[in-house]
Image (cartoon, rainbow, N blue to C red):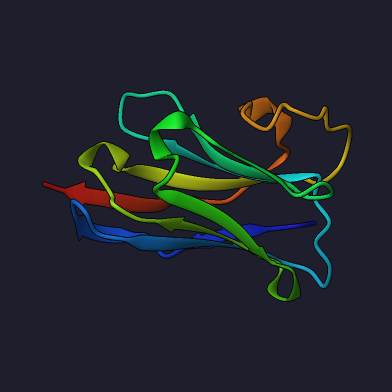
Length: 128
């Protein structure tokens, strides 16, 4: 049973940076895809970034392109989200997710229902 734990959230001023981490339990971690999603109060959960593990393809939502970077550390079973030039509209609870078992359909990384494991979330607050 795999568990995902997010960390690294906090409060920063606009223009600042934060790095989020998603650590997976277990000796090995072999997901089909790992993604980051975020949810602000009263809003739907939205896709932020994802990496398809086998092919190494990386995807971002348009509003974070050039500012956020997703990366992986195989030795530590960890995925990071490096966030630069943060804006108030980036304020949300950030979740990592993974598709580990079952069927993954290539290209569905942006869908919440493509994932079967979720972390507990970490809060990011950006003030103006």
